Image (cartoon, rainbow, N blue to C red):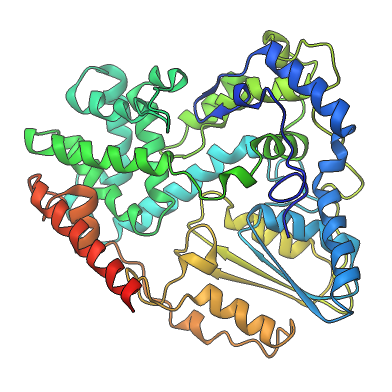
Length: 475
C-alpha cells in the first residue's frame, strides 16, 4: 500500500517541482517558483493536512478495516514507517495484534530537549560517531595505528589542519567530494564551495552509515593524516565511492515525492521557531562526522513554512502571496498512548544507527503505556535491523537476525512470549576487518593502510562480482 501522495496514489507534485529540489548542502529553490507551486497545490489539494502522517495512518486503518476480513494483522514500520506505525497505535484499529517498529523516528510525550527533531540530527549522528570511534580504538590493530592521538583525536587534528591549510593535497582531494555531477552530467553549484573540513565530516558520516563501508574509516583517516604520494589515488577512489553512494538513484524514484517528504518533515520534525543557520551549522561543526548537514535546509524550511521569525525573516523565499505548504500539528503529535489490549509492540534498534538513534527507541519504550512491549537492541547494527544484522558479516546470503525476529513475531501473531530470540545471542562480535572484495573495489589496493593503488585489483573484483551475478541468473 503506497503512502498517500506517493506511488500509485495521486502523487503530490507541482509543475515547478524541478525547481524545488533540495540539495544536501543548500537549496536551488527560488521564491517565485515556490509561490507558483504553493498556489497550484492549494488549488489542487486544499489543506496540506490531508497529506499528514495522521491522514496516511487513517488510510491504513481504513484499508485494514475494509479488506482484511477481520483477520489478525501485524504492522511493520521502518524509519519514517515507525512514525506512521506509532500514529496508527493512537487510532487503534482492532485488527492489529502487533506493531514492529524498526529504527525509531518518532516521539511520544517527549520534552523539548528530548524530542526527535530533524534539526538535532547532526548532534545525534555525532554521538553515534563518537561511540563508533571509541569501539574502534579498542581494536588492537587500530589502536596501534593511532597511538599518539587516537582515532578521534586524529580526525580532530585533520579538521584543524584542513581549516589552516585548505590547499594542502589531502584537503583538496577531500573537498572534491562535492564536485560530483548529477544524473544529467551537470555539476551542482550548491555544493562546490564547501570546505574540506565540512566534506571530511560528511564523507565519514556516509561511510559510518553502512556496516561494511564504515570499516574504511580508520585506514582513510590514517592515509589522510599521512598524505603521502601513495595515498592520493587510494583516497581519490574512496571519495568516488562516497560520491556514488550520495548520488545513488532508487528504481522507484518516480513513485516517490520529495515534496511530500518536505511537507511532513517541516510540519512535524522541525523546531519551531527555527534555530538560526549559525546554530544549526554549529551543531554540524561540533561533531566529527554526520551525513546530514541539516543547516543547509533552513532556507527551504522557511520557504515551506513562511515562518515569521528572526531566522526566516532574513530569507526572501517565504515572501509569496499564498498560504504556507505545511500543516498544523494535530492532537496526536508528541502524545503518549496506551498499547491496545489486543496488541503488543516490538521495537528493534541498532546502537550504531546514526539516522534514528537508539536513545529514541528507549524513550518510546518508556512512553508507551502498558507492559506488552519489548525493545531488542543490537550493539553494532546500523539503520534498519532487518538488513543490518547479518549473522555472517560480509556474506550476502547470511541469515539476518532482525528479519528472523520479525518472521517469528508474525508467526506467533505478535505474542512476545513465544517469539524466538535465539539469533540475538548468536550475533557476531564487532569486527573491523575489511573483506578482500571491499578492499579491492573501494580502495583498489591490497593493504588498507600501506598498500599502493593497483587498478588491476579493481577489475579483478568487478569481474568476480559479474561472474557471481551471472551464476545466480543461470541458477
